[in-house]
Amino acid sequence: MNEQEVNALLTRIRAAVDAVGEIRLMEVCGTHTVSLFRSGVKSMLPAGLRLISGPGCPVCVTSQGYLDAACEAAAREGVTVCTYGDMVRVPSRDGSLEQMRGQGADVRVVYSARDAVAFARNHPDRRVVFLAVGFETTTPPTAAAILEAHAAGLDNFLILPGHKRVMPALHALLGGTDLGLHGLLCPGHVSVILGSDAYRQIVEPYRLPCVIAGFEPRQLLLGIAHLCEQAARGEAKVENVYGVAVHPQGNPIALRWIEQIFQTAPAIWRAIGEIPDSGLALREPYARFDAVTELGLTIGPDYEPPGCLCGRIIQGLEEPLACPHFGASCTPMRPVGPCMVSSEGTCAAWYKYRRTDGLAD
Ligand code: SF4
Image (cartoon, rainbow, N blue to C red; front, side, top):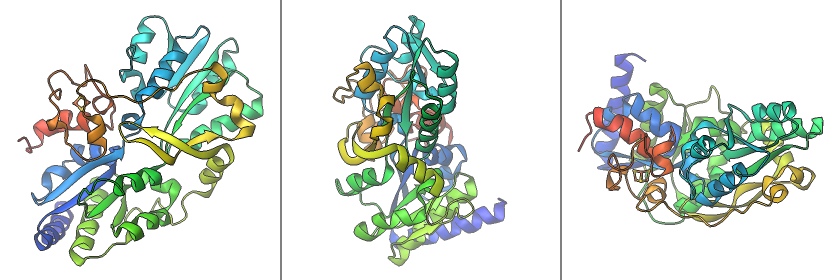
């Protein structure tokens, strides 16, 4: 993107903001939060445009009860826990998985669910528990891994079900406290799976513009420009500026895998609580892969680390600077809550970029 394009998009955004007075947009997804900071786009935006981070960081919305169950699994004799990287550093009731590994537990970071299946295949003496977290982007790979384990007759591969669905969470968020939003910047990767038509269920009842964008600077500016212009025109519709990857109906193969392996179930979201139909449980033919029942684990109630505002931050109710721990007792090296651990966490993004982007208070 050249300077001329940047200036043209910024001019469109400024004109719309001037017309409305103040525009408040929520970036639903943690990848957008980090991309907005990292690319410098956030620091280019006019003062009248507020960007509010939403509940789209998968590690951040995972309940403490789930993390405690993951640690309970790791403490079992003969069990190996396989997980995506950020999960190992989130503090739980008895320390983090990383700390448990230091004390001898077998905790391994994997890059995909299939890596965990491969580990299980190569270590028949171990029971392998994969921490199945994330939204619609990571659910299809988990479904594919279960299909592979099922076909191979593996009886030592399990998952700790923790996948979440974006749409029920948006309904819960928008049906609760009025955040005065003018639109949602919707995540390109989740939308690749769900399709752009899925956002009609948000646009119509809430009269809220939804624009799907990718994560490069041009995509971010274009998505924001479209949202601001809808706000200025008083419109509410779905727009997709990431048409190269997102189609109206999404990815039918990935959706079919999800449908084959999982059924909707209630899920507990950090601080938000239980949201009906926002989670995914294994369907009966695949129930033997559920670590909760197979290992007798307990997913207890959710709770916040003392003083941590992650729950309010992921609901767009606070910004990280409101937290007394921020940058003092809570840093990426010594995180108190998941928003400071995850590479997509709002606190981590603010800690890393806010102090150098010219926006410091
Ligand atoms: Fe939680 Fe740390 Fe963020 Fe405060 S700064 S909300 S303690 S993660």
